[in-house]
Image (cartoon, one colour):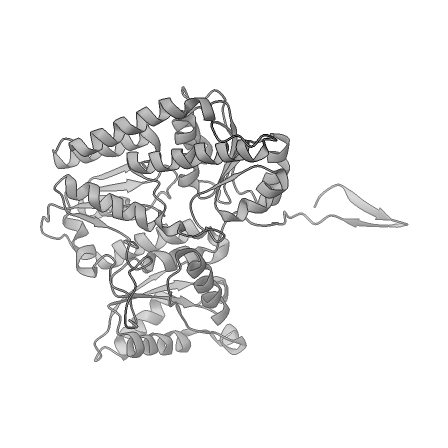
Length: 462
């Protein structure tokens, strides 16, 4: 209990010994798991919990991707909170099988079912025994109560569960490369596919949301959108030549680590390929894994990126930025901003304990003029109090920081998830030399627009 107290007359009320959250800089763990399961071909995400969880997450995801998103639910009520939700889970999976005919059901738990102690693996084992005469889909489960972490933890947990529960034996050598891309945009995944294709290698990207969450217009309604990583390919990831896993702030146990420890598939863990140096590491890793030199088109893209850095340096050098979002996105942004001469005065994330400060230092030391202040497990309220005193010239992060950017009269460069107040967030490219160039152009133009708008003259030549 805090030693300080608030006195009212003769009485004193001690302050509670907890830290409240005001405007969290993170999202629910099962939301991330639901997005990851959507990246599997023929899959339906299924939340074991109350109906409200699935409804909220569907709406939140739809607002970013502008695509229909179905998330099933076991729809527990007060009775189930006391006696357990096993019957609802079994009935819900049967309903999903009947209405959607999925190839896979991704079951993610919620705060309610974890708190009451539902043993989901046991319930699903019983389900398979009771209904073994039916043509059952693959059922993958992951533990994702919101109090266990953030949406990125849910994403990584779902990917790990897919790998561990579907890769049950060593597959024959496929010659493929596994890529675990982290929580990136649909356009980023399409770009990764193009890169691997140009290197002459078939890549199994898990999860692949490039079509399932950003598909073409259709004449007829489809229950489950096409696209996603085929379940058969996931099973064969144990026979790949290598895995490339993006992220400097990943959990100790991941899908890539599991494949290496269980089946000997070499795991190459590198940062998100954002900016020049991190993209160099990705292409060098691909060259080492495939034995193929970098194709000429990417040498040209790299050259154009360097040329743009030189041309635009005078507009961005010395500007002060506040960066926030998922840990690995923050690290990638810090790497890029350091390269172009922008001083990151504050880097924040709602997650904790994954080495963000160490990772930011690794990509900025020797490049950045100042050492960024790094804050983990921070909410927007606390981050804003600190950031305002640092007098930033711009914010870089998702839409939820707009209120503060508006209040401080500084521009916001929107990246990551969610982007709810602009169109096309799912098609923004961040990765590789091309992604770095697109993001650099946006940063420069955002600063130029701010300068132009603030000018009394309103000049048209900068």
